[in-house]
Amino acid sequence: MGWTTDSGGIIHTILRTVLSVVVAALFLVLIGYLTIRASMSRGGLALDLGNAPSHVQDPAVPWLAYLLIALVAGAVVALADRRVLQPAVVAGTVLVVVLLATGPSGQLDPFADDQSSPVRWAVRGADSPAVHVTAVVLAWWAFARRGRPVEAA
Image 1 (tube, rainbow, N blue to C red):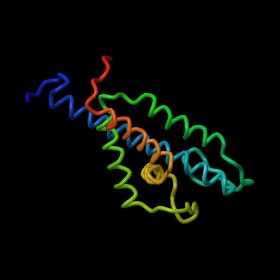
Image 2: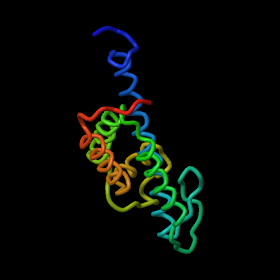
Image 3: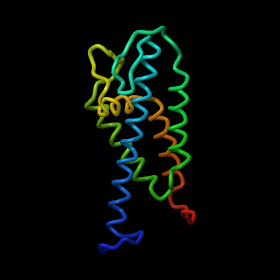
Image 4: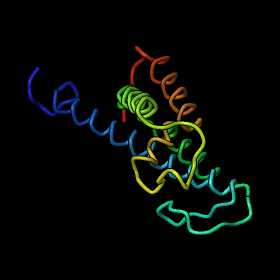
């Protein structure tokens, strides 16, 4: 086992694992960002682009945020590359467990909690059912097909 860049090399494995962690973290942050926006819209609070409260509005169903959450989760499933799927599932699962274990869960309180931090967005993403369903689908796909040959790229 040498320091080569072929598919069996250590460098390739390290790069694939780092990429998996980065993609999983970005997925959690984006879903968390959209989840906070949807929750606040349902409660009648408008947010600026940084997710800081801007003004009170009539409560509304956040169809756009829901649609974007579904599209992001669907894109992650559709674009999942079988060769990096298992590390991505493991990285995403570890991130979700760590964020749920260390971060606050439950209802959002925009006046008590600062929701304008990407770390807070990731915590809310880890708490989102969209992330849990996506992780289950990817885990099933990654591990149910284990042992089958990977299609050529």
